[in-house]
Image 1 (cartoon, rainbow, N blue to C red):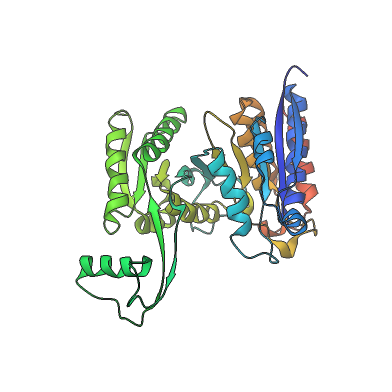
Image 2 (cartoon, rainbow, N blue to C red):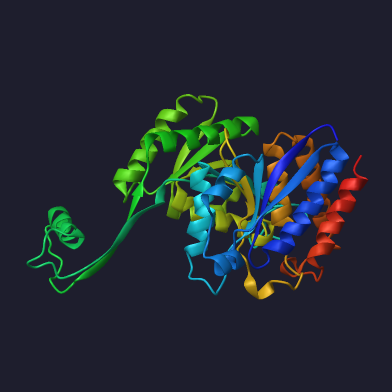
Amino acid sequence: MTHGYNIAVIRGDGIGPEVMQEGEKVLDAVSERENFELRWIEYPPGAEHYLQTGELLCEDTLKELERCDAIYFGCIGDPRIEPGILEQGILLTLRFYFDQYVNLRPVKLLDGVRTPLAGKRPEDIDFSVVRENTEDFYVGIGGRAKGKGKGKKRDELEIKRTLYHIKFGLDIESDADELAYQIGVVTREGCERVMRFAFELARAQGKKKVTSVDKANVLTHGYGFWREVFTDVAKDYPDIDTEFNFVDAICMWLVKNPEWFQVIVTPNMFGDIITDLGAMIQGGLGLAPGANINPDGVSMFEPIHGSAPKYAGKGVSNPIATIWAGALLLENVGEVRAAERVLHAIEAVLREGQVRTYDLGGNSKTSEVGNAIIEKIRAQG
């Protein structure tokens, strides 16, 4: 082996360990073919570790991960643990700690896969969603307040009532003694850097259009600002066409005319929503990879599906999203030809249609899909 990479592995929960096993197998096969080494370093964060130790992700682990070339992540979520604890304590912590400000989602209908969209072919569904990954409503600013407020200091509830009165000239009823609020934050730096990533991606892929998503017609302050920054950034890319779409409109057009889109850049929350829509029009969550990227730091690669606990241990889940995420990992560390080999092998298996998991209408095992992709890699010229 001429060179190698240290890859942190977090298998996670549910089907995570079994799909990750196939991802590692495939990446090992292609690394052997391309004469480099992947050194897998296991880390325990997940439901079982949390239930046994009460620990989500400690500072020592984060410091160790800083020394890795990339993170390969399975999926998290467990019905024994309240929703949000694992997601915020592990997944979001990793994204924020490593400033992985780009969430990249390729949405591509591969040959041999059916889309629920009537009449659409692989050439009609081939775009990338660049989602801002560290701001917006995911910054965690918010809370809840109780108390009728009369005779009390200006607590959060009274402040909210005052702001409501100023804006609308209306009063919240005195017996409305509980509220919850969540604040979204976007910064110029945060907007600009993810937008530049989107434009540079378009150039690198030979694409000619970048679509910006917002809801500036209603959420005028935050998303009006997003639109303003996009307009400024676009001036540096005169060779690329631009357009604006409101988030509700783009959901409609992605279903009706996905061929219109090439690169989409979107704030965090809207990107979270439309990438699941993108996954379904490309054939399902089992085919949908994701990358959490810091172009100058440690990036993380994962399938975008959940942990699917009812299928855990059955060996029937589709590993292609995880394997494809592994291809994105290889591209990120500079092994572009190896990444291309993996994607070509995935496409060859799907095109033949002999090895398919239940979500694609077949009955193949998880391991059989991984083995079939490895065979295609080894057979490539």
